[in-house]
Length: 267
Image 1 (cartoon, rainbow, N blue to C red):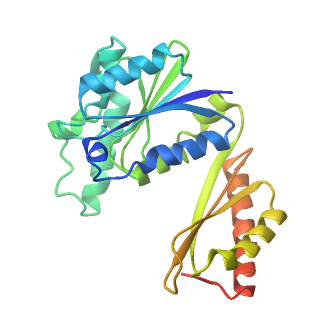
Image 2 (image 1 turned 60 degrees about the vertical axis):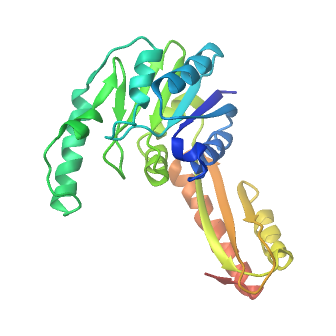
Image 3 (image 1 turned 180 degrees about the horizontal axis):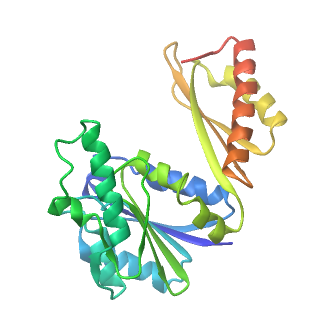
């Protein structure tokens, strides 16, 4: 079983301003691929704090380390500098990463999302990687993910924006995850329903779970009341992303029919 550790980076998390949804998501991904998350740490946006956590994970023999956050253009985005320091490597421009950043800002400028495609120093910062690292394309943002191998450990650095992190994990990172875990892909989808009483929802969930034993279906409980909406997580792992997605689609289709029969509406 692959041993995984997660390092979440951000003052905003420690201040209670932003919840750490990234670690929660990565735990589900790892579980779905038959791995085991052994430890999660949350540290400040400081080179020393990040570096100490990385070193501790390496010393404990983690086979895969995820870092979340700190890859952006601002001065407090110091994750890659911390990894470079912790692994005694230089931090320098990676040409593949630079090409990605340049292309992304040309696309953003063409859409009118940024004023200019100029590669300024803050933007160029996102292309500075530890020696020996390689970038991973970010389908949803401007900062690439980064993979660095240190002896028998892979350090995978992901953006802190949840949508970007998820887009990388479920897209370009799939080949590496398959190599590490030796099995397929994890997928999940969440739907929301209008239902004030989870006990009314339970029979529909039970029936669909019986029909789809390889799909995990779980409602997120809340309080009682006529305006209450329940979130239902539907997730699966399979030999490929396509197969996992198909399993979820079929289960959600059956779930929708069961909910309608029970008088419960999607919201």
